[in-house]
Length: 466
Ligand code: 5AD
Ligand code: SF4
Image (cartoon, rainbow, N blue to C red; front, side, top):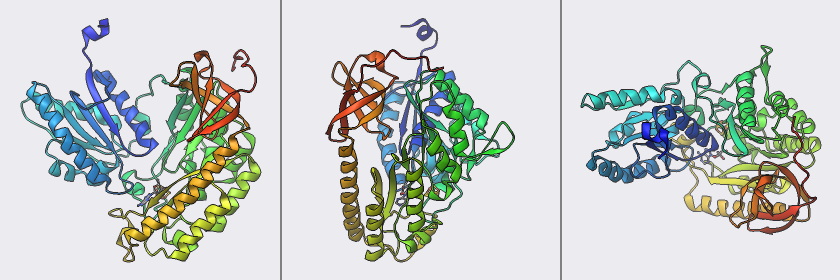
C-alpha cells in the first residue's frame, strides 16, 4: 500500500453516466469535487461508499430506467450495511432536475437528489447528509435550484488530463425551446463561460499533454462568453484563440443549432486549420411544416444553404446530424421530405430517434401522436439510408491520406489506435512513443467502422510545438 493509502484509505465512488457528453464531463467534475474528501473512482457499485447516477432525460422512458437501476442498487446498499458500512446513493443529472422530490418518494434508499446546476455544492451537500448520519438520524436532500451564482466559477479545476483528447464545457443550457425537447427545462437558460476561464482550462489541459479539445455545450455555437476585452466573443473567435495555444492541434465542438452558425464561425472553418472539418449539425426533419411545429426557426432550404456555405468555406468538411421521426402529426409526405434532405446533403453519420413525448414539453400535448408501428417503419427506412451514406463516406476514406491523432495502444501488441478528423478510429502499427502525435496516414482498409492504415512517411522526430 502507498504511504498515502496508509494515511487515508480511499473511499470508493461509483458514478454511472447516462446520456450525452455533457454528462460525461459533469461526472468527471463531480469526481474532481469529491476527490479532496478522499473519494476515488471505482468501476462497479458493489461495495462503493457512494454511488451517483448521473441521469439523462432526453428520450424514452429514461426516468423508468433510473428507477429500475435504483431497484438493483438496493441489494448492493443492503449488503454494504450488513457489513457495517454505508453506501450513499445519489441521483444527479436531468432526471433529478425533472423529478426532484418524486425520486425520494419512489426510491426510499436514495439519499441525495441534485440537478446539474449544483455540482459545485456536492461536498457541502454530502457533509449535511454525513452530519445527520453522525447524529444517528438520516438526512435526505434535494437540490434542484438554478442558482444565480455561476456554476462555472465554482467547479474545481479539471485534474491533469488523462489522454490526448479532452472535453471542455464552454456553454450550458438552451433558450431555443424546440417543442419536443426537455433541455431548456432541465439544463436551464443559456449560459456561457467567460473566455479567460475557457482559455485557462485549455492551457492546463494542453500542458498535461492534450492535443485535441472538444468544446461542449447543449447549444455550443450560441456561445457568447465575456472576452478579456469586455466584449462578447462568439464561438468562432474563441476557436481562433484556442488554436493559438501551444500543443492544441485539433478543436471540435458539439452540439450546434443551425440558427446559431454565424458568419464568424463559418469564417473560422475557412481560416483555422485546427478546427476539425467535421460538424454535428442536427436538423431533425426535412419538412418545413414539421420544422415550424418543432420551433426550429429555420426551413429545409435554410439548412441546405448553410451546408453549401460550410462546404464553400471548408471543402473537406463532413456533416453529421440528428433526426426525429414521428413528430406529432408527421405525414408520409413530410417524412419523405426528410429522406429527400438526407439525399441532398449526404451525411457522414447520424443519430435518428423515434419521437418520444417528454412531460412538460408542448409537443407532448399534441393530439396527433404518430402510431408506434408507423414510427418503427420510418425509423428503419431513415436508418437504412443514413447507414448507406455512412458506409459510403467511410469507404471513400480508403486510399486517402488522413491526419491521424494517435491516442492509445491498440488491442494487439504493436498496434496503435488514433482518430481521423472525422472521428473514425484508425489502426496503425507503431511504437507507443507516437501517442499524442498527429501523423499523416495512408488508409488501406475499412473493417466494420474502423480504418486501417500506415504512416504515409516515416514519422519525423517531434518538432517543438512552440
Ligand atoms: N424525442 C425524440 N428525440 C429527441 N431528441 C431530443 N428530444 C427528443 C424527443 N423528445 C433528440 C434530438 C436531439 C438529440 C440530442 O435527441 O434529435 O438533437
Ligand atoms: Fe433542445 Fe437542442 Fe432545441 Fe435546445 S436547440 S431546445 S437543446 S433540441
